[in-house]
Length: 227
Image (cartoon, rainbow, N blue to C red; front, side, top):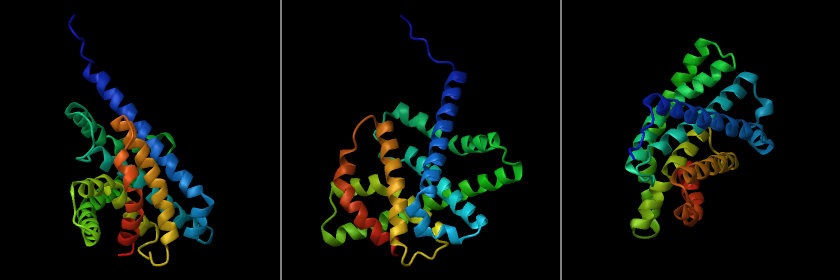
C-alpha cells in the first residue's frame, strides 16, 4: 500500500501550531517567575517603576523564547536527521508566533516592532555568547581534571541554559550583578526546569547526562555568572 504523504499546507499548519504552543508556554513560565514572591523580593520589583517592571518582564519572556530557539538548533540534540530538519523550520517560527500572540492581546504595531527587534537582538547576542561561555566552561572543567568526552558532552548539553541564564540575569540587573547571586539562582532554576522538560519532550526520554551534570551546572554557572 502506498503511503500518503501529508500535504505541505498541513505540515506548515502543524509547525505554526507547535510554535504558537511553545511561545505561549515560554510567556506563561516567564510570568510565573515574574510573579514569584522570592523573585520579586530579590529583584526589588516593588521599588521599581511600572516601566522598569515591564522591561524586566519582557527580558524574562525573551530569555525563555531564545532558550527554545537555541535548543531547537542544538547540535547535540538526539533526534533523527528528518526531525532535525523540521525543528530547524520550527525554530524560524518561534518569534513570529509570539508576535501573533501579542496581536491577539491587542498590542499595537509599533510595540510589535520593538518586540521583534528585542527578540532578534537577544538571539544574536546569546548565540554569539555561546562561544565565550563554552570556552569559560572548558577552562573551569579542565582546571580540576583533564577534559574527557563525558565532560565535553556535559558542557555542550548545558550550553543553551548556561548562556541564557547568564545573559538574562545581566539584563534584568542592567549589568549590576554583584551581590545578586540569589536572583541568578532563581532565574537559573526556572530556565533549567523549562529547558529539561522541553528537551525531554524533543528527545523522547530521560536526560541521564543532565542528571549527572546537576552539581557541575551549579558550580559552573556560579563561576561564570560572577565574571
